[in-house]
Image 1 (spheres, one colour):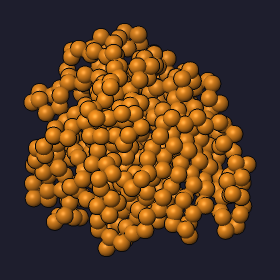
Image 2 (spheres, rainbow, N blue to C red; image 1 turned 90 degrees about the vertical axis):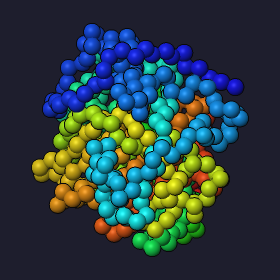
Image 3 (spheres, rainbow, N blue to C red; image 1 turned 60 degrees about the vertical axis):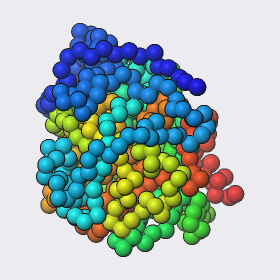
Image 4 (cartoon, helix red, strand yellow; image 1 turned 30 degrees about the vertical axis):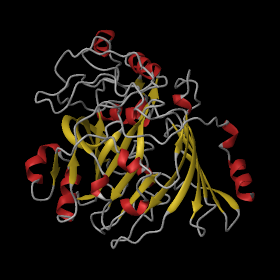
Length: 459
């Protein structure tokens, strides 16, 4: 059984090198002439370089996975399309200096913090990401129409897909991440753990229902009423936490209309406004090991940082994490003291956009500096380095993803935030033990209301 995207992209020019632009209040749209690069083979529809690199370690992009792997039928847990891929080499504390130019500061810090146990197994690079044809079409269309709202706190004149396939500054890159295609509905049930420094942990399970109005067929920025994401989360285990519910209305322009959030506490049996669910307040199901804006690597209003597009580079990043996605392994196989089991992780060499965020004067956040690395084929943040007030690396963060090729889209199967100071971390998104993601649900708008929280709480 197969699905085709009807995409054929011819290799053409050299890949995009580093570019430096300051963020302006409103950026000019890409010209029609420049946008032709997205259709003539110079760039992919998402603005990536379709060619491989000079030494052949990054292959050309040919549309990603366009056929379902042998043995897969819709509804099954996603099987690994590359089961025979060998480990090409392993980066350890002993040889990490040889790969410094292709590692982030946070990755290097992990080798310093855990010299005897941390490693990175590097596999052949597979540019496996693929999306519906309409998502590519709208990315091309958005290139000549989309622009930043005043102050960069929103996006105008875009529809369905990433707004800036040919970005001119760091804020446009971040908006590509925030508005990338993840389907217009998601139902996910996953496990989250925050082990102690000795590796002891309690499994917390979470059920989330997510509506993404902007990604719905036919949607535009003008039609979504400033609602980017509607998010309903319920803790289902352990028993002492079960029944806690969080509702979030994520707005596109959070300066014009701030994010709204409500919580239901089963002990109090009350729905309360929760304005603290934003920025650097502790994230749910994390035991204080990540901030609210670290879910999905980065979310929320970009107004507290100055954003700089540093450029583009080749880098070893987590990719095609089908071992983590597999039900052959249990949570206990993944979780170890200090960090997750590196034998179950897969790293590949890809090109990434590098965006640096520095805290604005007069604003506050526990992270004074953040460096984000965005995969060129998906615009998803795959690696993030978070610095403390002393500008020392504090919490490196990774996004382990797979191709959900039956949709098709590229998305998370586990996120990890490590704390180099206390030796702890949080891992969330695990679906190994009977949990799963679904993109087939149909959620009505009335599901995402405070009244629905009350009804759920009374059950």
